[in-house]
Length: 410
Image 1 (cartoon, rainbow, N blue to C red):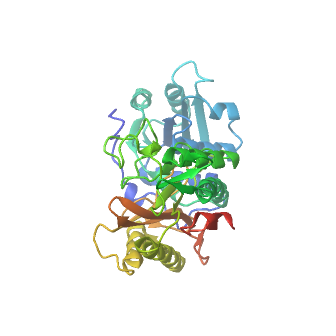
Image 2 (image 1 turned 90 degrees about the vertical axis):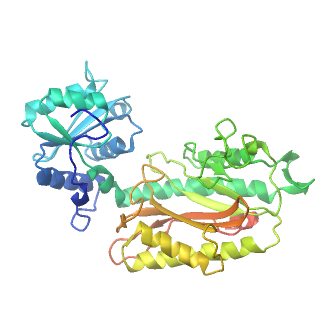
């Protein structure tokens, strides 16, 4: 079979055991899960092929960095193939720099010289040509999601990288808050330093703050996202039908209306942050104040819930929603909550449904409340589910206040 999107059969429901795996390093975590899964599936090796920004490949390269087996130049090759032999716990790599042929073909040849022909486990979306080269060498590809499962819980070093990216996210949001704090009102619009404050201008300010803090915006900064989180503040890339139309990025913002700032920068180590704040300039209270109280209370409840036990994504989303609705938001469409893991991607496992938020996970929690029409109040923060016996805690971030100046006074 060479269909890269449906390689072989998978028993991924039983891949890995979070309760018994080592937690000291990415290498320990991944190699333990790979070896266990290879043995259970009767496979001879694990193989992945991709480009440097592929999060699965990047995770494998973190292992190679820890093992000091790969140079910085090799990590930047446009296409890389890696393999893990579960019996010897050895890694093999092939890149465009050290192979005169396709890296996947070179890697398949290396494997054929070291292990017997048989099943090799790969991510489901292995490139089509890579699957063909493996079959050509006598191997039978079969899919597994062991890589994604291993990435769900984070080591101490990974959490530190995420925390650094979250610090940069906070710096960006504060830069945006500073612009709003200095804004005055002219003809019903917000103006700062003589120019209108627009979503595009706010996005630029946030991104400048992120860069100054040593991280990369990575195209993830959004001002006033629509209900599907489409990037409505990006001028030329605004999707047809997004809130406000194609010119929304340059429309002056108004006082007394919620302004949502969302960002998920990537740190130098490749790990992301995730932060959303809603600010109101010259607000008059009312519904957005009640929505704000409900949203902030939901974060306290979720932290207590995840301190007490491991829970599924669905259970935490339901808890967030219940806390918000307790403040009188009964309309079925008035509240939206979203929970998902953060790491080498802005959203990764635990991601949906029954995915468990296990000890060591870093998750992005968001509560959103419809204020009026298409205007929402949104807040999101990153929470670390502690190891056994530890409290679940939020990573440091700016105030959740609706007042722009409050974010600058910490």
